[in-house]
Image 1: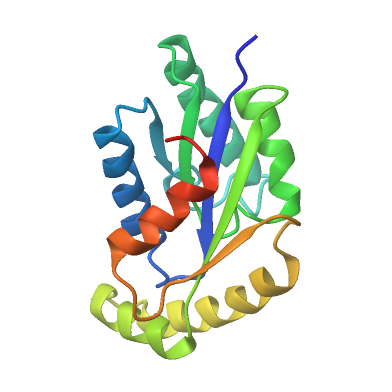
Image 2 (image 1 turned 90 degrees about the vertical axis):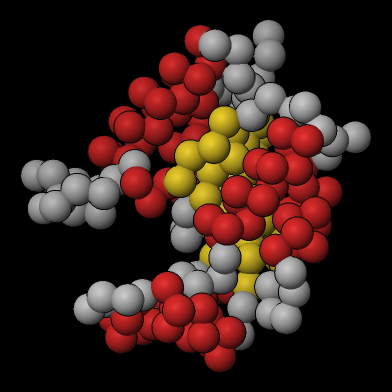
Length: 177
């Protein structure tokens, strides 16, 4: 039986999860490594929250399960998943249920200082969410620092290029030998 593998890239808002994820995907394409990419933020992006699912965990899992089933039917076994809290220990159950038993998880926590995250968020958040996003980012940075799953690889992003960070993330997977 071929088991699935998932690279989970987590971190506070403004740390570069999506950007680094796309760069890791580019490196995997260059190395001819088959994989699928899912931005976990979109798996539960509904308003209002479904009845009985205030944190949108159930809809996120249902959507990931459906999307992964489509990838798996076509032979994909590696998933690159970006989402703020994906590196927390309690996310393991969702990935095991959605991707199948025996799924190998590689957790990478991208980190950035408050100043770096603020600078990136100011450039990114052009609408009305900047102040709220900065507050949530700082709160989630503390949570992630305290509660990331054992074995999570922590990678600082301050003052580094996206390709440099992506190479370090990819090294953690062992997917390119």
